[in-house]
Length: 111
Image (tube, rainbow, N blue to C red; front, side, top):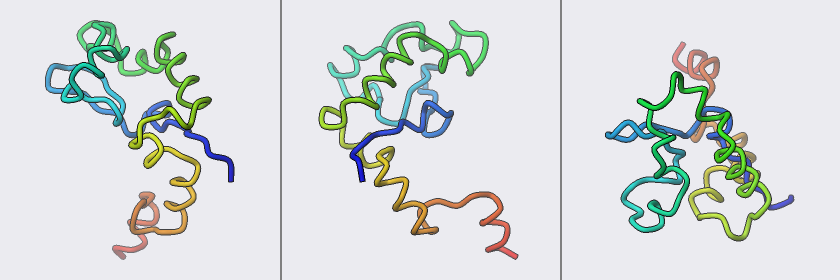
């Protein structure tokens, strides 16, 4: 299987808002220090107060360029990206239902 990262934040998964109202993908957080300060996500354009809707974050040129870089440079990606968003992790989740549940599966399990 090809080593490739398919960022789930591109599809609205594995992203969150920080306490200061900053939209972030799961691989980015202010505790990363200087590395975070150099990232696109430290820019004010990623503050919720500077946007009209959450959907705007997925349409920003800087985000789309970042996604393209993540998808095309597996070896230079952070380990968290490789672990959560690689094609291999997607396959592992399909095989082990304890890791990932759809709502239908969860409702069926609880019944």
